[in-house]
Image (cartoon, rainbow, N blue to C red; front, top):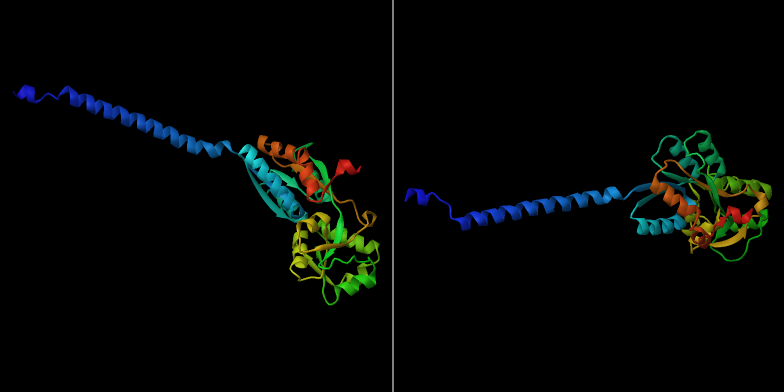
Length: 272
């Protein structure tokens, strides 16, 4: 009896074996699922883009489309071109840099921080005077001072930010600089100058035409003649050469022309 009692019925052995097999299969499937969950984000690349503030609306739209098409994550950092260039030169983790200044891109090329032969001078823009009133403004000292009243002219920093540098060149060329030099509200980037006008903190602002198109609370009162300031150009280049970054650069320089045009930019090749 004791020998019989010590035996485990075959049905119980089979049940334990089946349970063990199911547990093993479940564990394997669970590990596989966990691996896939962990592997998913690894397959998607992160692309860091440092871009001039005036490019925000267009780049937001282009990046969203690229993310939807590829699954990659495009991280956009906007600021004035001078600040961005200095950060890239100091080693900031940018894969692509897109500036509103050929001079600052030239500086990055001299510092050898760009991928060789990746630069394209892609876009153009116009410099305009914006305000709340729709009545056109004559680019004369009397009209400009009258429209300013007791307020200030909003403008990006005239000694560092491209939009501000162009504005000072244009105002100087037209003989208007003495009338406004002491009445400026200078900002870190052109979008900040636009915001001052949109919010009513400044009656007038010198910004890009693309900025004016992006802000419904302002109207273009005058357009500065192109021969009054240096050529407005937007160069773009790779800082780190990855497949994902090069793919996004190809989208920017290729199939995005319609998006840029809709946001008020021109193409360099179309103007030259």
